[in-house]
Image (tube, rainbow, N blue to C red; front, side, top):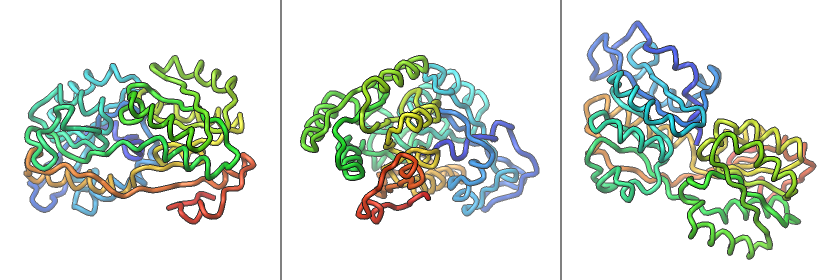
Length: 329
């Protein structure tokens, strides 16, 4: 999901000249910690953030009554516990997390500071919340059911009817797609579509270059990228590689298509960011996270980069273009 869309220049620390929001003491700046395993975006990406826009609509203005403390692990998950402890030491008012690793690191660092999670899979089973309806404790937010790999394979096959072989680049710890049962299901789905799969695993940043070399030797017809673990920090490298090798790609989030990937299918990011802003707003106004039910988003979006398709020499079927939520030209 598009966490890069609002992290960037928040590293400047607390912002001055606060103004009061409804229900907030005049002159008080509330601090929101952001814990991410990924990289930091640019100021331009930050300015376009739907998260900040949603907070603005709720009366929270960066530089007036809200400030951010971003901590990013630059693709190194083992740094997350220390970064979470740093946010706790700063006594931020709430911590926003994204993937499983980040939420777990924040939860292990504090049982008192509220945590708003965006993309947590199976939070009850992980012990983060007591139930979706009554989370209890200090964690709430949204949870997403893992999308099956078969949907991505279907989209690739529809875009490239003669497709016969797909490479999958992923972190084996990424939930939902990489467990044994999910992999078995995807193998069945691939056979149904007449596709052969090549699994390329990434564990550390140092694995990325050799993995790309292996993909070049495998010469698949398309690449499914599951950007967990260290991959978000090097997504640009993967997209550049795919472009150089004429390799169509599909991702679970639209920001990778905006950066040059071919297609994405995943949860509707603006809806997720608006829900995240709603949780942050209610918590900053006094709500207890344990009383706020965990939501399950239902909106999905398909994004296609037609410019990338043309560069690859692909003609995307009109039936697929008509179903896309956005076509980048």
